[in-house]
Length: 374
Image 1 (tube, helix red, strand yellow):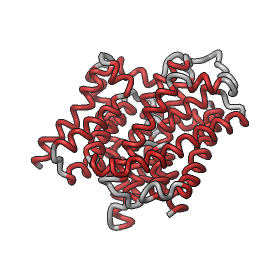
Image 2 (tube, helix red, strand yellow; image 1 turned 135 degrees about the horizontal axis):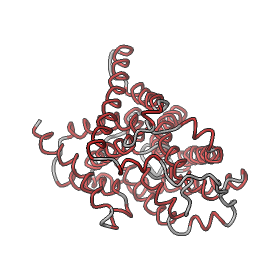
Image 3 (cartoon, helix red, strand yellow; image 1 turned 180 degrees about the vertical axis):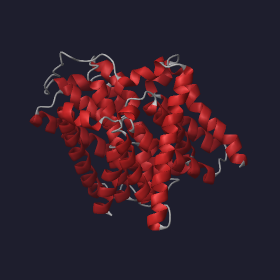
Image 4 (cartoon, one colour; image 1 turned 30 degrees about the vertical axis):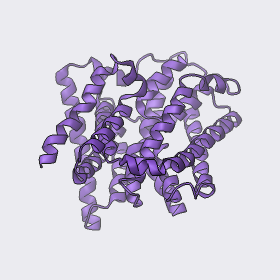
């Protein structure tokens, strides 16, 4: 209890402070709030002795809440009907990523201590996100103080290097051999996600509260079913159940269109970033950093090359390839900045929808790959 009283307010306030200063400080805006939540979490965990039980409770709770809430805004039918090139591009991306994870698992088996786990979790984090990777890692028995934080840090490092390319020369390179994006005459200049900032403080509070209540209800139902069926909390059942439940709720128009659901999930995700960062043992990670960087870096480079090659064959345009890449490798906050860099606001809705769907697909990709490799 003393640990919760001391650290819980800190964990809850840090994301809000960073979001407040995001537009005022370019360094926060460029590297993202999520990045700084990881960094501050790492500092907290290595400067102070944050109890492991408290950190595990925080990571488990935030993951369980964030996954369904992040999916509430996913317009699955519209995405499948209106974003055919994005769906094809994402399918090609999955083929490239899974293929490279399989290849590197064998050719790089001496680079890391647990190659099958590392390959499965890498494919998960670059399909869904860090919450998915953490969930899958726990399901397959990965070490919570070394491998999970290690992959998280390596992901941040490699993603940061790739982000520089994405925001500078990568799109120009893609445009050399991929078709140009065909703009729609009826393109909308606004998305529903923009409306949350225009709400009154009271309405924001109500929407966030509704999101939390429905997310908590989803968690309660799935946890109850798990206990009823298995006699305990079965992590695999719970995570897959939360994924499917979140997608099911997204088919309710009133919930899907309610401003603030995604922002609520993102905020919970930022709290998770602090908690997972605080579990990182810097000394233990540095002992294994070189091999893990080579392992994950090979998967990433190979994925980019194969994806762009397949996109050329299937005649997928450069903007769609870019937004697919950003939705897979990076987190949702990068969709807007990259769309602005491409001067193409039409891909924002598709990118946000795909980014939300990634959280649903990530668990299945990671567990499927592990069942094959393990």
